[in-house]
Image 1 (cartoon, one colour):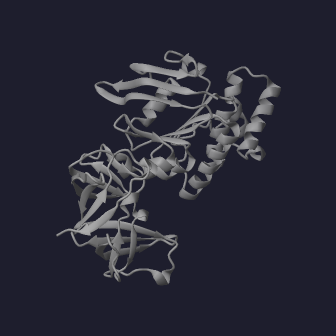
Image 2 (cartoon, one colour):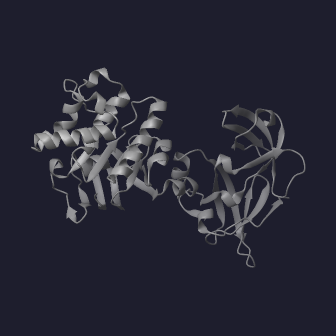
Image 3 (cartoon, one colour):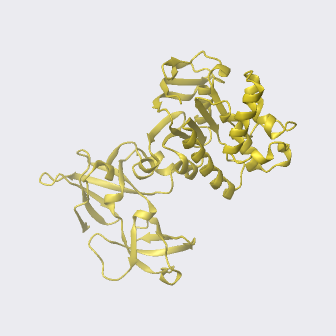
Length: 379
């Protein structure tokens, strides 16, 4: 197990900063994921950790050792690549044994450790097979066994499941997570797949244009994004422009005007001006247009998408804005219909409110007891 520390690390390609001032720590035994769109710098950072690239600024530490100039082969790293990098002419056993033979490990020890690794990935019965005749999932298991057989202090995985079909990806990500916890290896995992990152990680670093936007647990990344990019990249979110109008001296609440309603919300600080609301589709309540509760908005269902375990409604509000609203475990006979009028409750206590630039969190349920205290119809 290795504790990894990045001390203001930057990597350039010409004038472009591919990694910009990365400054954080990965704990020993942690499953840590670098997540972001293509070109955001996550693979560059991974390759810098491995020693394939040399950073221009900052230091990387493995425990108490600064490894800036330590060559890759001395960093005790296991790597699993997107393309597997399996030797097609070698048997499964010989592929897994390759790193041990390069380290001059004895024959009996190689036999023992290779078979242990193959047992862990459930491939011991295929030790004499040629990988070119095996499935993508089996080849990925070979690559994983080859990475862990050397008993690395750090395991690096670069988009390891992107070449597999959807069902196999789900199984493999579960297998990788379970194996990592069993072996207790510090793991850094690169992916652009949000669901994959949420499923396997202890913590996630969301990256954009070389900059780490937020580091947190999957639950906090999803529920309490720190800026608009994170809210938009992780899952689905409804964004609504609104206006903050002054602060009530007696209650400390700011009037937020959105979709012909005024909501009173206690923000993190005094604020007046445009704001941006981010609300997850499953956090919004929807019901048939009957008795309207205080704070409900009136809307009409524009589209219904039934997905089995959930149903997605596109609802057009009176001000012309359209919301994506999701309900789970809906019986088919209780589905709402297109063109049907509905009441919509935004449940603002479950929203995140940003400043107009989407960079500062003005309100979030993560801040504790902040709750909207009233809603009134605008004149």
